[in-house]
Length: 422
Image (cartoon, rainbow, N blue to C red):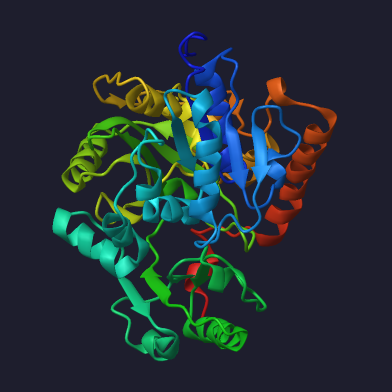
């Protein structure tokens, strides 16, 4: 649903970041704004491939924009520069965890200019660490996997005191934090899967030598492949009332070390009981803005176990648009024009993918699910005919071709023999 040209030019959308999430957000703004004579302004420290050679937005690269001592002053200068031209102010959408944290910490500097509210830092911090987040889950009756969190000094000893057995999943407490991003060692990944003690200790030894001093999260492996995962996108208005929710069933994840655990393809789904449960949770918290839940269906209990909340749109959130839900429209209608409707729950099934159909045919292992995929056209975030030129097409095709090599090298069946290796 596109907005009216006469209404939608009086505010400026600002996107923080330049990855595929930022590009997808720009597409959502484009859909909402229609033919209005305004483009989103994309602010970033460095332009990434996903947003290069595009006509959807204007870009301003600001050196060190992702640093805490640079961000607030730099953003304020931009807002003050453009404010006279936009009487309704700005809608700002951060597309990464660190930009979300930056704008939440410094939001008081921008009040009166930015139309959308952000969560207080105290609430945001309850999502930052697993011990705080799972304490929140306990309080509100949400299931989560058995978990142990250890310091750098406890990495070796913790493996003999786990309240669960192998196989296990291990990840840094924040794989996007600068200290983990800048350390380097053989076999480094965002997420690790181990079937035995020796492989875990071998990784810890290499990690220790790299100088990484952050915490590790060790969790029980919930049985099931990629298709047992679920992702839930939500929008809560400026008063903390949930206005839209869309559930997705990932059918394939990425497996290369830098992207493992990120979703490669998703079918949009519906589950009213889950919608109502998570809606009540968010409204009890007084949560505002976008939220993105990662969870997994546990076939042993018939319940969903919650892994984390990302306080932003997820990088794969374009799957909701494929199902007919533009979350940017809900945001702008609420914060800019004060127009609110009853909460909308997705009921449609659609297919979003970040990889070629050939990869889905080969690596989606469930026969019934693979057959279902054939019934739906594929929606892509980056591959879009209205914003295509030779340079951009070359970049995207090169990325998609590289995925064939990546999956051949790194893919493993999460239901396979690795779970039982000695």
